[in-house]
Image (cartoon, rainbow, N blue to C red):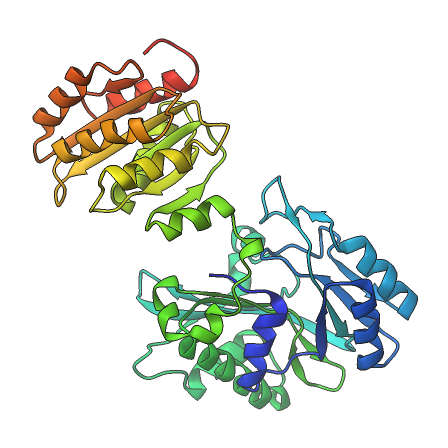
Amino acid sequence: MNIHEYQSKEIFRRYGVATPRGYVATSVEEAVENAHKLGGALWVVKAQIHAGGRGLAGGVKLARSIEEVARYTQSLLGKNLVTHQTGPLGTVVQKVYIEEGMDIADEFYLGIVLDRAQEMPVIMASREGGMEIEKIAHETPEKIIKVTIDPFIGFQPYHGRELAFGLSLAKEEMADFIAFAKALYQAYMDNDASMIEINPLVKTKQGRFIALDGKMSFDDNALFRHPEIVAMRDYSEENPIEREASEYGLSYVKLNGNVGCMVNGAGLAMGTMDIIDYMGGEPANFLDVGGGANASTVAKGFEIILKDPNVKSIFVNIFGGIVRCDRIANGILEATKMVNVHVPVIVRLDGTNAKEAVEILKNANIKNIISATDLSDGAQKAVAAAKGALV
């Protein structure tokens, strides 16, 4: 689950992580009121969407008068903002964040993510603040300092010193920076975050470290422990089909291809998408129906996949273990009675009672349901069907 910048900064402040003062607005009048409330002569108007790269896309504006605050807010609200993280369709801006201007002396990058290989959080820091971390990692990886932290011992002063030395901070700056990094790590751990990113982390001309930006995402499986974070969820920022799928216990992610995928198990789903790509096709989605798939879940899976008008064929790839293949086959037949499945459906079933399942599908004699002998055969037929070729 993702939250907005202004919400991330609310969490930061609870842990003593310094941020600029700011207020969220959903109208020009509210933005102007917020600017007056902040005072001063310099404000930043920031589009609030669940994506990075807003500045490069024109979603962050520096206002030097109240009139500019109003004009920039007017131009951003309702705008379809396209960044490198939104995809080509972009995201409509429904909120802006009005923030006080800062007197910036230097910019850094600071982030925390889970290193799955080491099974521990890793803090990443760089002097290349304001730059895309992916670009830095690709072009100049030596500019990123990485410090892994064992949760059993937590953030220790030596972790902070390693980061500070790596950033070549002056001696008098180190204590403040280490305290900042420690507070950020505590926010990460306490809230079951999966990622925190501050880009840029700035040092003001007065020598203070301040989170000029802020991004947080959370482990969905831990949200039951954090009702206050669940309350921050902005459903308008989420894909409505993905949200509907989650309500039915289905894991669905929309992609840009035309071969729909229905699979049980995340690993098998990834393998299925890989082989579709290998066969010259492009998957339209990731859809894991889970280990307890039945007629109703399969029907809902078909319904969700077919909401994507780009889908030209569906590849059902099920390995029967917990649930038998013959039950899945009957579920597919029942699902076709509940949902109008108007594209070719290629079915590959393997595992428990796979032979019986093939016979069930064969005897049903439904024209657009086609059995596959194995994974390769199924992917090949699904790709061919999506291209309009005979299967």
